[in-house]
Figure 1: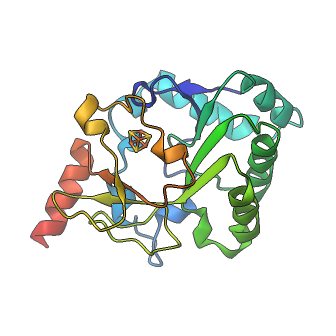
Figure 2: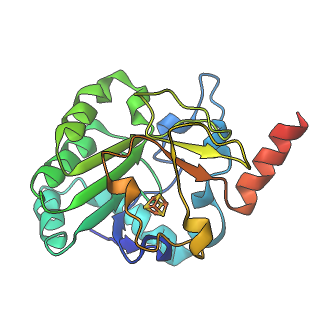
Amino acid sequence: MKLSKTSKLDGIKSWSLQAIDTCPGSLDNNGNLVPACSGCYATTGMYNFPNVKAPRVFNKEDWKRPEWVSDMVNALKREKYFRWFDSGDMYALELAKKIREVMEKTPNVKHWLPTRMAKFNKFQNIIAEMKALPNVAVRFSSDSIDGQFTKGVHGSTIVNGDNIPEGVKVCEAYNHDGKCNGCRACYDKEVNVIAYPAHGKKMLKVIKLNVVQ
Ligand code: SF4
């Protein structure tokens, strides 16, 4: 399997897939990208570089190997934190089951898994099983880019400007050169909702378009 490190995450490792291609939850009922995914950072810039794309394409086949779970558990032995899906989503139920097994077998690792698969009924049980694990924070991402979310359902939303809803933890990476800088709120299941300020040129364009409409 191929793990990646993004500079934002203080060197914390992640396992990712290609964005959109593996994100059935990114589409609304009419087949259009929801606002949050229209500005997806993982479809632009450095995510288009072959060396960034290649491991994501590789991982899409690799997880199907019978040894994948034990290989992941071994790879996470010395880690304290792990981020699933810096890009992409757990598009297949069999993949979700394997991820749950990795989580269960690595109780000393705090896992953060953002997803939109909670939109689909067949994923409800496996997501509930993940959430029941003490070391796992599953964050069902809101589709909104203006801070809307459903309490008790969503674990994250995107905010724009001063439009900060009550009761959320605002990600302050933008105050630290775009890095987490020691913050681990996303991995903390006691933190109910994280609000990410919109970032990236593409997202800013979406917001502009939305404002104009
Ligand atoms: S809330 Fe904290 S852990 Fe999450 S992305 Fe922002 S800085 Fe990193």
